[in-house]
Length: 78
Image (cartoon, rainbow, N blue to C red; front, side):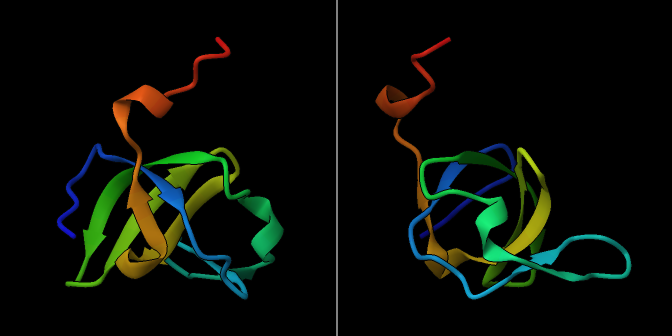
C-alpha cells in the first residue's frame, strides 16, 4: 500500500505499544489510540514506517498496521 503525507489513516491492528516520534523516542501504552481514531500521516520513515499524528501525539507506526480512511468515513458527527 502506498501512503503519502497528508493521508488519513486508521489503526487496523492493535499494537503491543506505541513508539513516539520524538527526537528521543519513548514507548507508550497502546490505549492512547483507539481503533476508531483517524490519524494523519505527517512523515515517512524508511520504506515500511510512517509518522502518524493522532489526538494524543505523533507515533511511529508500521504501514502494515494501517488502512487508508475512505472519504465517506470522515468524522460526520461534527
